[in-house]
Image (cartoon, rainbow, N blue to C red; front, side):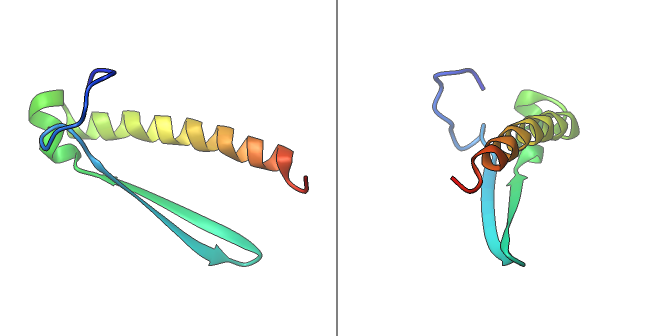
Length: 73
């Protein structure tokens, strides 16, 4: 999807976030579905899912570094 474009019913995925207690902290589970429905318009579902996974991993690595740096403030 192009920047500055609103998602429609045939060009978006669904992302859910689940947070639950885990020991002394929290566990975040992120699930993104809907790639099969996008395949006709945007190409290979597995390839698109893989690209999204890279983006999520990068973003969460950055977030984890930030949280670690600010812990205890």
